[in-house]
Image 1 (cartoon, rainbow, N blue to C red):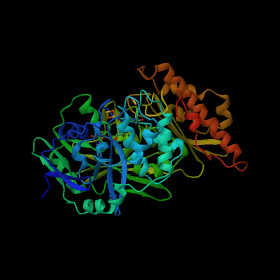
Image 2 (cartoon, rainbow, N blue to C red):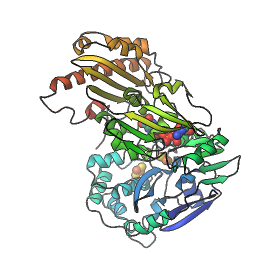
Image 3 (tube, helix red, strand yellow):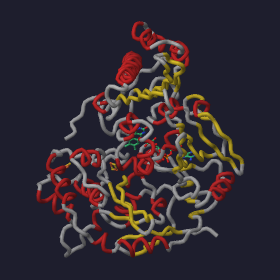
Image 4 (tube, rainbow, N blue to C red):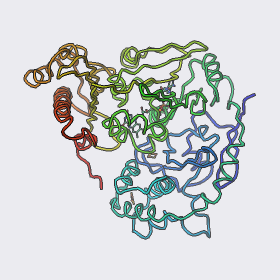
Length: 498
Ligand SMILES: Cc1cc2nc3c(=O)[nH]c(=O)nc-3n(C[C@H](O)[C@H](O)[C@H](O)COP(=O)(O)OP(=O)(O)OC[C@H]3O[C@@H](n4cnc5c(N)ncnc54)[C@H](O)[C@@H]3O)c2cc1C
Ligand code: FES
Ligand code: FES
C-alpha cells in the first residue's frame, strides 16, 4: 500500500503534507502556503540562487546538508528529508545564526534581496566537512548572484565563519532528526489519482510497474531540466514519477576498470569518483551549473534529456560509456553513441527508463582531454564541449574517440577525423591539417551562444591543443610528474572569481 502524503522534518518536528500537486514547487510552498517570504524568487530557473534552501538527508545516523534551488524543486521530492529555510536559522528572540551574524559583521548585504539565498548556501558550507579556502567559498557561491554588494565581503564573512565553527541548534538535535527520518515510512509514495499524480517509488520493481502503466508520465530525477519546463515553459505535467528515492538507482560502484552509476545519482554524490577518472573531467564537473544544480541534477538526466549541449555526453562518448535501460523486467545495454538518434529523439521506448551508466576508466596508453567553452566560467551552458580519448603507443595514435557537444543536433563523435588520425604519429599530426577533417564531420549552427564559424574554429583549435598537450605529456614522462593539476587555467574563458 503506497503512502498518499509526504513527510519531512522542519524545526525538529515531523511535518505532513497531503494533496501535493505533481509540479508544485518548494518555493511556492514556502511563500504561498507557509508565508515564508524570506526565501526569494528571482529568476525562477535555477540561475540566481535567491530561492536557495537547505535539505538534509540522513546518512548512517547523521544529517548531510546541501543547498538546492527551491524554485525548480518539486515539493513532493522533499519526502523523507529535512527542510531548512532562512526563517529556520534563528527564531524570534534567538541570536542570529553565526552565518547571519558574519554577514552583518562584514557588511555583506545592501538591498538584501539576494542575502537569504547566500545565507542558505553558506549554511550548507558551514555544515560541510572541510574548512573552505576562498576558492572553495567562490565555488559554493557560484550559483548565487548579488547585484549590489560585491562579493568580497560575502566571501570574507564565509571564510571567517567557517574557520571558527560553533555547534548550532541543528548540530545539537542532529541525532534526533536523523532518528525521526530513519523511522519514516519506507513504502512507495503515490499522491493523486490515475489521471494526475506525483509518485515516488522506492524500488526498481515499483518504478518499472508504475512506468509501464503510465508510459506517458514524466520521469524526474533532479528536476533541473524538468523544473524549467514548468516554471518557464508553463507546461502542465499531470503525471510525475520522481526516481530520487528508488533503491537500485542510487549506487556508485567501481573497480579498476569501470565506474557504474545508478541513474538517480547526483553530480554531487559522484563528483569524486567521476572526477578521479581524469583531472579535466573534475574541472568540467565544477563548471556544470552551480553547487545547487549539482546537488539535485544527475548524470542520468543529462543523458536522458538528449540535449546537444549537455556537458557529460561528450565526455562519456569519448570514454566509451554504455548505458542500461529497463522496461518492465527487461533490460538492454546500449553503447551511449547509439542512444542519441536526432534532435529530441533518443533510442528509448515508451515505459523504458535509464537504469545505469557504465563508464570505462582510462587504461595504460590512453590519454584524455576535455574542454568546456562557454562565455562565463561558472554556471554557463557550453557553446562547445569537446572530449577526446587517444590510445597512443610509441608516438602513434592507434585509435581515438573525439566527441563534441554544441556542434550538431546531438552530442556526436567526429568519425571522419577519428579515421584520419588512426595510425598517424604525433609528429605527423603537428605537421598536417588533420583538424580540417572536422569540416567533414560537422556543420554547426549559429545561435546566441556562438556563431557556426566560431564553433568550427574552436573545435579545431581544441583538437590541436589536446594533441599538443598530450605530446608534451608523453615527452615529459620520466622527466617530471605529469598532469599533477588539471587544465583549469586552460579552461578559463574569463571570470571575475575572487
Ligand atoms: C541553472 C542551471 C544551470 C545548468 N548548467 C548546466 C551545465 O553547465 N551543463 C549541463 O550539461 N547542464 C546544465 N544544466 C542542465 C541540467 O542541470 C542537466 O541537464 C542535468 O544533468 C539534468 O539532470 P536532472 O537529474 O536534473 O534531470 P531532470 O530534469 O530530472 O530530467 C531531465 C530529462 O531526463 C529524463 N530523465 C531523467 N532521468 C531519467 C531516467 N532515469 N530514465 C529516463 N528518463 C529520465 C526526464 O524525464 C527529462 O526528460 C543546468 C540547469 C540549470 C537549471
Ligand atoms: S529564483 Fe533564481 S535560482 Fe531560484
Ligand atoms: S544585496 Fe542587493 S542583490 Fe545582493
